[in-house]
Image (cartoon, rainbow, N blue to C red; front, side, top):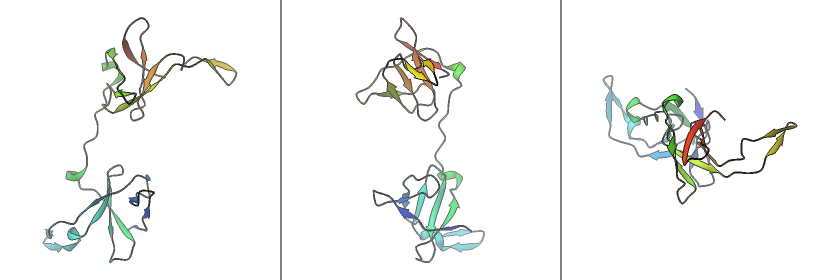
Length: 156
């Protein structure tokens, strides 16, 4: 049994001690019967971290919280990441916020504008000399195919 004192973030919400993301408060539910015993803990509020798939419940109004694994029925489904070989060349368009959906995982990709050649460790680095998209979630890079409006997945 691991007991933790939760800290509040800048937005006055509790933050996860493992990943640092804001915790979501879930009100307590009905009394349940588990393995023939009455479970009164289900009536208490809890703080859920969807990223780490755990929740925290306060122990006897002490300010200390016990950590539990999130039940399978409450876990959010993982985003399906498509294999890189299955991604055909795709037309990608920037939206008003400068982002577009990733063809590989479906999350929002950032647009990186072209810049001058940079010297890295004494060698020229041409990786940012053309416009491209970078997905911070699946770490994919999509570079423009020369002479077309299509983008292709790239290793770097």
